Amino acid sequence: MSDENYQPLDEETLFLVSQTFKALADPTRIRILHLLFNQELSVSNIAEQLNLNQSNVSHQLRFLKNLRLVKYRRDGKTIYYSQDDEHVMKILQQSIDHATHH
Amino acid sequence: MSDENYQPLDEETLFLVSQTFKALADPTRIRILHLLFNQELSVSNIAEQLNLNQSNVSHQLRFLKNLRLVKYRRDGKTIYYSQDDEHVMKILQQSIDHATHH
DNA sequence: ATAATATATGAACATATATTCATATTATAA
DNA sequence: TTATAATATGAATATATGTTCATATATTAT
Image (cartoon, rainbow over all chains, first blue to last red; front, side):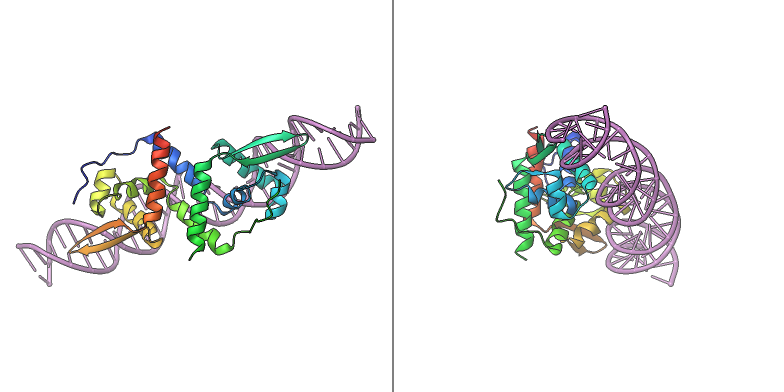
């Protein structure tokens, strides 16, 4: 049974989709995004809660920011990060639920 | 506004979720899974359609099989692969649609 | 101005990953 | 049996990735 309606994926779509999933393919980034589900947090706060060093968190946040999965705002010396892609966060939530219930 | 209901992710969940997304984080594997959306295909057929060498396809299929994202059946010398995780395929489909409609 | 604090950045490094090549395995056909 | 075809496997390799360290930048306070 072959599929007559098959359409090959174009390069651009392929790149975008793989990049997005790459963001979710690392435990550290998952933990960060999971923390940001319902709250806005500073870099140091994230680092503290997840027991990660500041530089590491900053690098990962840059990665997520470049993909527009998170956004930030500055308040004095502190920079607060929060989620910025409902679709991806929903997928992450679903997958965590799916994995949790066996 | 801090989140009182926050529950840290356990190691096992974290590993499972990241592994699953890792499967979707590579263009070659996305193309393979995309081909398998509505059909069952042999290794050589996949390799031919996607212009990949046989060994590469075989390695990637093993990866996907280990995660139970695809299953296979043998018919003589030929082995046919098909999808085996509706949830993940649905997520992939959604993400492709999302990326396509810019 | 200097000091202190929060975050970002680049280099370095170790590890992970994708792909290819050569070869092994499995099944069929002659 | 030998030959052929389809797939799997392991080693090799080049590239990508995650983390740390040292340091730079930005903001506020003194």
